[in-house]
Amino acid sequence: MWVAALRRLGLGLIVFSAAVAALLLARERLVDREQAEIEAERSARLAQAAQGLPLAGTPDLGDLAGRLSAAGLRLGAPVFIRVFKREFELELWLARGGRFQRFAVYPICRWSGRLGPKLAEGDGQAPEGFYTVDAKALNPASRWHRSFDLGFPNAFDRAHGRTGSYLMVHGGCASIGCFAMTDPAIDEIWRLVTAALAAGQPRFHVHVFPFRMTQENLDRRRSSPWAAFWQELKHGYDAFEATHRPPRVSVCDGRYRIAPAAQGEGGGAVDSACFTLSDGSG
Image (cartoon, rainbow, N blue to C red; front, side, top):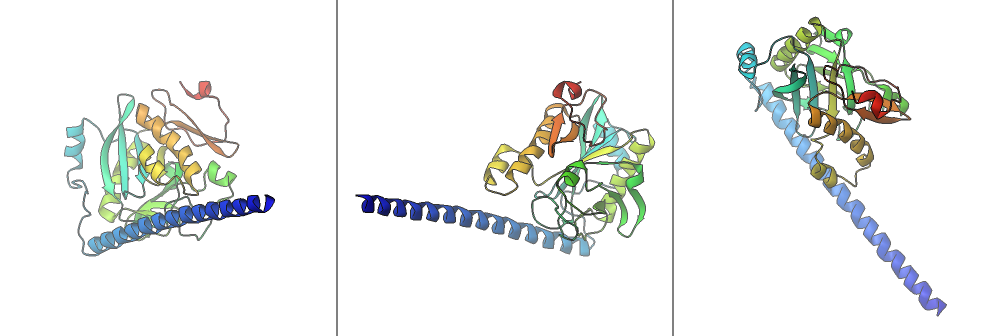
């Protein structure tokens, strides 16, 4: 009897091992297929930029004043930026009436690495997370035309021992850990963010996501080793989607803590204050 039981146990272990192997293989195939699609998109965008062509989806960069007027927005209004790696998009939002309104979506010419956060200096990864930019982070004479430093590593990155420096949003179409926007696009972004800072915004938030943080997109990648980290990012994504105000972001015990910002807030630095929801709910 015990021999038969051992045989059944052995068979069960074989079946379980086969199932795990199949799951891992499926995950690797998904990652490889997605990375191949990302590389193909990078090549296509580089070819367009090399020919001096605007990337598909680029707004009318020659009519900033007209576009602002049509949207009921103004130069100098506070700025908020979101980056979506998989979609190759940078969104720029401007404040109006206590909330932020999406003004423009700029195609990203190039970002490097895979979906997932930056871990170490030299790994070629572009960061993911919540960052803030002040006037000191701006470089008008960058080797890539103009640039602003995202401030990596932030408090969360440091808590996890992540290293790296000079992770930028800049012009051109080359990147090692940065987000390259092309020179014409960074010129318009630069004009909007410098006007906001000059008008009194102390800093602006830049939230960098691997993809649009819908539950469907997360479910597709639930076997990723970064699934738990991405779920933390989703809390910040959802908070902004609900209020159209950049949330208060802190890092407590190595985890992001998100609280809704009160009206008129949204420019606070990412810090290590372990606030309660009542502290940050406004």
